[in-house]
Length: 64
Image (tube, rainbow, N blue to C red; front, side, top):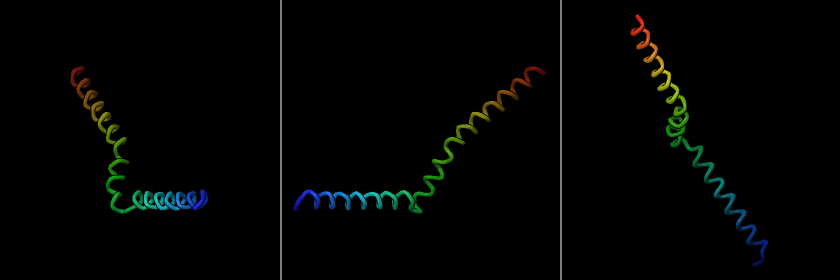
């Protein structure tokens, strides 16, 4: 067994690890997690927008 056999084994193991990672990332069981993660930036914006709307309506009531 020389260095080229070792390199071939490492390459094959790396390819299998990459294929496993791709399968894990693209599996249907992960879709709900990814959808929830995709909504996180929007949730923060909705929260900020709701706070601004409440402050504006309170300021309008105070000025009347």
